[in-house]
Length: 212
Image (tube, rainbow, N blue to C red; front, side):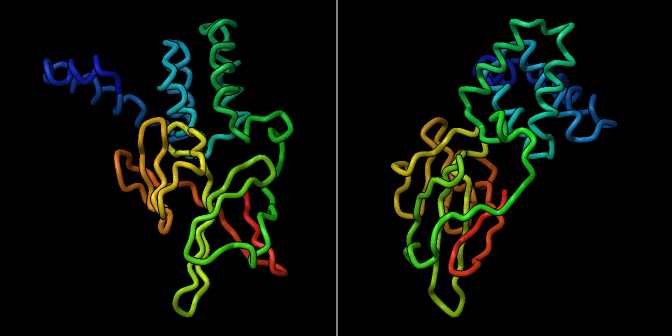
């Protein structure tokens, strides 16, 4: 939320809180994915960079596909016009989401080999590049079980790619808005309210594989 909106909420709560209540109630008969896609279009129409990044991320998280986001933009051409659609695509290119790369738009989810399990150190967080994605892998061999967690390196807020240098011990902090995460659990421990995106994984023939 912008500083201006925060100011209005503080200065005129009786007016602004009703406005936000109206917005939340206006889409009550829409499914979550449709509501998110409409929100994406409104952010493009107002050319709100941060809002577009945030709602695109939310739409993907709630089940919208990259092709549905693109279709929503193109279906709104009569009101958005070409200039605003190109503005949105420029932001998508800057975000560099693997899902939106042309070669991945119609790809089916699949298992990807990340690394040989023996090469993953225990009690540490490791960083790997795998088939166009960057991953953080945490391994804990204490106790009877070999616990593994595989996370997308992108922050769940606005999908900023978090670099390996942002890791201190098992705490990972996004450099853009300072959301911080405990990599042993994936939970957000500062600023934000959503966990890291964790990929399903398995060990097969000594290889750690992740599914996306």
